[in-house]
Image (cartoon, rainbow, N blue to C red; front, side, top):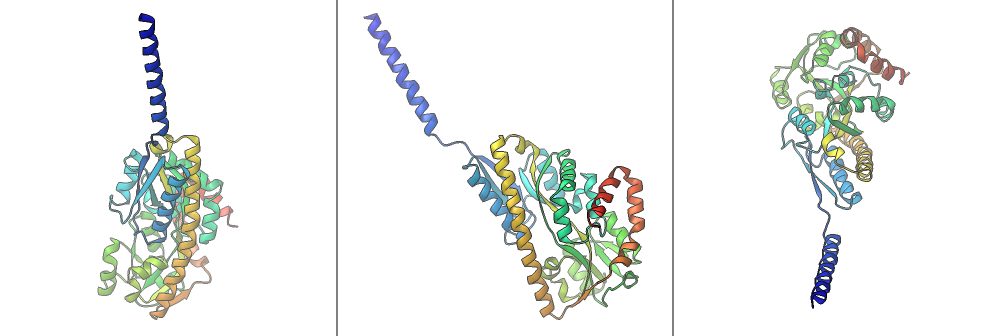
Length: 334
């Protein structure tokens, strides 16, 4: 009797174990929900590329990682978002390298005026060994750079006359981003650099508080600045890369297979963003031309570049450890 009872108990336990195993095998894998930051609207080239990144990651990981992009900086401005990604409070983001300097000093190299000769040169260099060195510097601050986006070439525009030589900047009040290198750039050309919130530029141009500003074609057009500053001169003094960065904490939680999938999705997103950006540049250029903007080609930038030498000298003196990055980028474009 006791033997029969023991057999029944063992059978029950075996059935329970099988049922438990079947239940575990049939239950869905718990998805890792990722939150991503984007300063632009979803229709912007960067927004579209990030949405494609999120979808591809979810597909390639069979839903084990499910990214969601929060657009229009609803989760904070860029400095806040950088800190959130570094701490792991956010999982990924698309960051411009301009405001990254205070966190990752090496990225200040990318803000040196005329460090890149063209967007094509920038892409080629950032996709190679030099880009890996910047990625290593970002990784030291808990930011894993998986691919590089573009943000076009920034040029000068103003209300009164075209800029053909540095002398044409003399005396102009020019809005720049809040970065000492950009202030020095305008000062070296004899202008008066005026750091100012982007939202204040249109009215300041209209009322004469400033004479000009600098930005890329899509920003110049979408902001309406072309309505009040009719001279756009192709100085192309700043060509700033952007990164698609993942929080180090989130990255390290992934196994090798999922890391590979996420990196591939980021590289695909970069290809898409670059293509969409170029299309956006051409569309914006045509719009401002149709609005009677006078676009001035600057065929010889050597006079502008010569004016920047004191900035380079002071930068290298202050950051001798970054000299090799500067010279290697320059050598790669000779």
